[in-house]
Image (cartoon, rainbow, N blue to C red; front, side, top):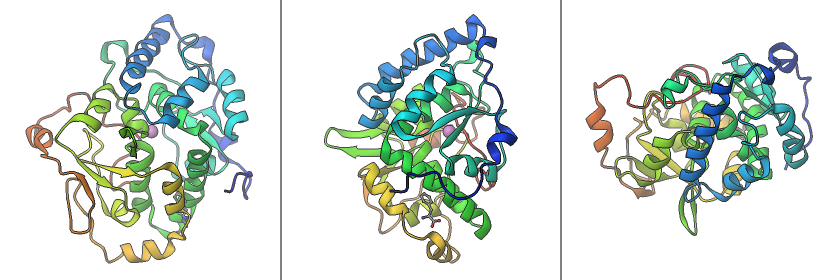
Length: 305
Ligand code: PHE
Ligand code: CO
């Protein structure tokens, strides 16, 4: 796999990195982190994939409340060469991809309000660090994320970012994995949400479909509520393998392949669970969403992963 630091110079880091200002967190901030940390660890113990649980163990993310990036980075860097850097919220696509391509993961530094532990209007440090960073300790996933960054820059140039963004959404954010001990979670949007951790694996409402690259890239997603379909990979190795092909022909094929609705099940799908969609139907027209954890990085149709 390609693990050396790639091509172009890294401008995004100097342009967007800010100081985490760890000393600036309040006691309340730290206690929000610790509460969320304990709740998610308990929920994930039986539900997280091995790589996620192993990464959580290796990083020791709750020794003093909110983790100090200066303490995480030596561990992370020695495992896979990745680093976490603080950024001031959402950054431009090209900068985001450039950072990933250089094994830098941009993370928010703010933490959610203690009065609304389950509400997020944009990704906070708990989502970004607890959700994403443990998986970056896995060598295969580490390579996948770097490759995604490189692919993102290509997709931008080829004008197919909306297709590639769906791959990020249904893997990095909301991916499930098939294992000998059943379906497990590796997606950060799930792993950082108490309610979706349970929903994604245990609720009869959503579809659970075998991962297929082209299929995923055709599938719309929801940013404002639990997913209506989850895609299940056989292993991280298989995911990386499937993305090593040149996407230019895949993008070309997508020009004539219509988008699919988030809840669609179509001929050719390998259906692990045919969802009842009962949850989604009951929620129709209701607002705001119950737990607001409709996560992260952008609006469907927009150019953000
Ligand atoms: N192989 C993809 C391309 O040709 C790059 C990529 C790799 C994208 C991994 C996503 C994930 O563009
Ligand atoms: Co995210």
